[in-house]
Image (cartoon, rainbow, N blue to C red; front, side, top):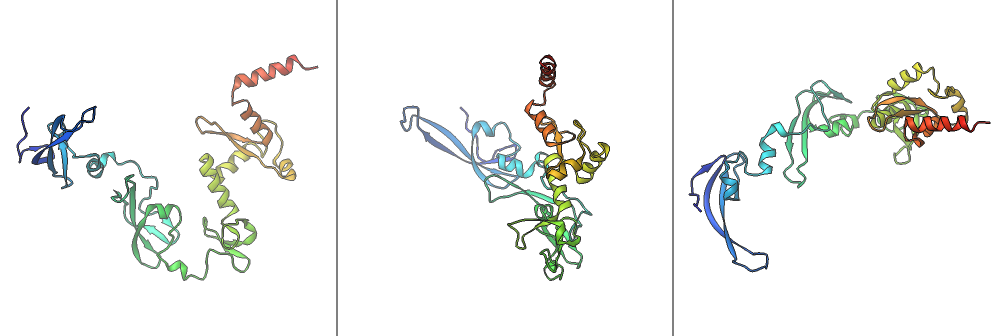
Length: 278
């Protein structure tokens, strides 16, 4: 088998030196056979590493998977927290497109997204897109000196979602918050829950209710009848596609779920009731 010469280039790697490595066979005996390895230097990541001849002779574009992820931007996946120029988060506005890179310190190779923002006070700084989306950062620090804080004060509280100052009655209870109230008002909390669970907003929910005349879509009972008992209407959706089908009461929503959303099971139940009706 021909040996590769030092100084030769194959793809992005250049051969520096050759070394014979001893390996154990299946019985665990040393020196049973020898395999040559080559120390190469990558022209892209500028790092040295050991590679086998079979991997060098194919003229690789990247010396390793790490090098491929770092320099091949076409394979960079879509980031979870997407932001664009002009987006506002509290007192901040995004002024530049975000930059993406892979973290060097973690083994999982987590993708990091940073963006440059401008505060209402005129200060420009860089922060993580994740912090903006999760509302961890909403100012350059000037909001801490602002007299209007997020905690309840004098029977009023500032909503973390819509940033309106509302009476304390518009907030739900939350045991883990310092003031004992949810950081979002009831409307914003409901809107967030609907978006996370079903992908619709509170405005979409109200429009569906309005089209159903504020009734259950199956039994036709009005919403007021359930509110007296302390119950509410639920969003019914397809568990396979996630599409919202309508808004139902507790019994109708549970009944469809018990029949596994199957039309055949429901038709069989209808025929069974017709046959055995007195």
